[in-house]
Length: 247
Ligand code: NI
Image (tube, rainbow, N blue to C red; front, side, top):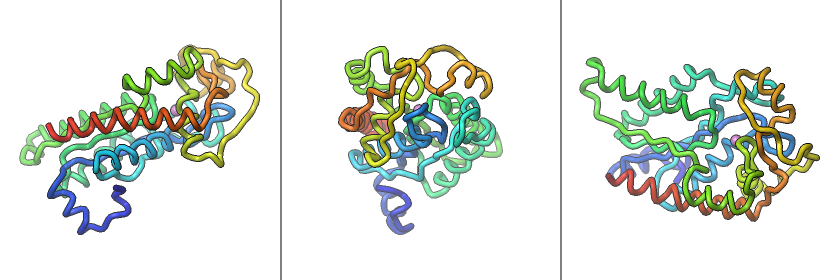
């Protein structure tokens, strides 16, 4: 159930049976020569909506721009500063908490968001713990990266082995191919498996990873594999969500 397709009357009724909401968070950033700029937002959105269906949970609007300063050397990439993203997440959670939502389950599509989202949770909790917020009801937030669970990791290993890499991975590209088969791209990838390593800012990233990929061969992606990865992620996350929201 998408929040944006409900009326306020329906949301009020939902809150009588559940205090949980799922929030997809991704990024708008380059994903190499064949990966879509929206890869991380698309993966988070389609998987979050699948989890919402499986778990009977409300799914909020996708936060499609994340913390991706290191990708700004490539056209189309966008970022929020960490401080901006923290402010956005805090305002979103506090808006929903006003209505009685208490459990905020973020389905994340971008590794670069993890540190900032975790810091945002600390800000949200601090605002409720400090004396000025002492009368506010408590909220709980959880961040889950769609690819970091046993089901998806096993499948990605079986499908791609050491060609999975860590950015513009065949797994994430496959999920977008499953979601948007009309937007499948192809281009030469040289070398087939991109280099691995570290980076700091956007200039450093582009110097180290000239085509945008890190350690991956997204040329191995297929929409069929994307469906399997989607199914695995939805199964793992809906089980996790349901046990967490009930606790
Ligand atoms: Ni990505």
